[in-house]
Length: 154
Image (cartoon, rainbow, N blue to C red; front, side, top):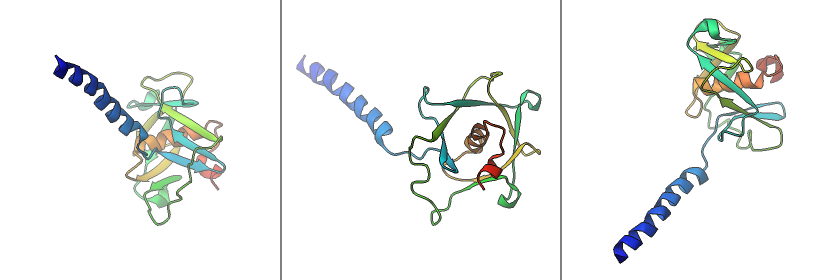
């Protein structure tokens, strides 16, 4: 009986340790900086100030994002570059805008069609941290006032 009590008390501690390790370990979160504002993918369901969704049907899209092959053809470029990385570029600050990806489309949020066809935004992504979907979500989510991100970043 004492073995069962020990087992019953150790299992919750092991589970708590596993979950704590996942949440306490610093994980890179897709983030971009535009002027004095950082735009970051939300990590919790209550964080997003804006949400976007994706569709495979171009007729349902409100925003089209084209994936291009070279950075020269892109409005927005994300490429891993260890030598040129800014360590605190997206440090948490009051001017952080969180973007979430919704599972279902809504009339109140942008619906993104991501493809290689011409679109409203052109992105180039070559990264271990960013997926093309995350980059598109950040670019479109940052463009909440219909101002092109490429122009705002200049």
